[in-house]
Length: 122
Image (cartoon, rainbow, N blue to C red; front, side, top):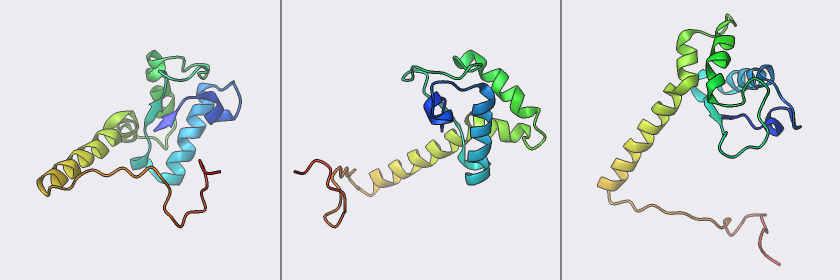
């Protein structure tokens, strides 16, 4: 999920919709269209890209991507939410399988014993 926090996009407090599109295109090139989505993060960022100040600008983002001949309508649908829905459908399937198998959730927050990580130790 692509965040729109300007520091993640351009490493400074300014970015534009074109910078976000370049970032999305890079992720698409590296990971593939099935592995990219819009994360934005409007609820927790203090700098937004010019042209993407809030969700009302999504139509402009998607329309601009559609102007690029490498993007199809199906690609835009995946970016806009179908990828997220596919992943969460699988997450729910695994949750249900684990529930039927009585697998309890486990959260291990400390590094493994053989880890080079020494955070929190003196």
